[in-house]
Image (cartoon, rainbow, N blue to C red; front, side):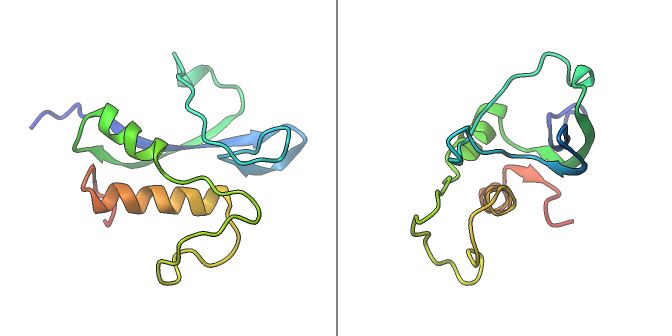
Length: 116
């Protein structure tokens, strides 16, 4: 097995107006949640990047993982969310979207080490 498998990482960014807090998802100017995929040629040049957290090694192609992540539902205020036990308690946020995405990747076995 190759030792240079692509890795899934979580990036934490600084908020310029609130330097004491962080975010990893955002809403549009209309205050609507949206999914956005942005390619970065060199993550080391990102000025607001505070940390990258290693999640696990991909066991599938990058395209497969991107397809799963892009398919994780993004809810808006007032949207009904499916009830999956208590996994969907509370309002939608970037944290609940991340949790849902990681759960989906784990269920499909696309990232090694998610339960470790």
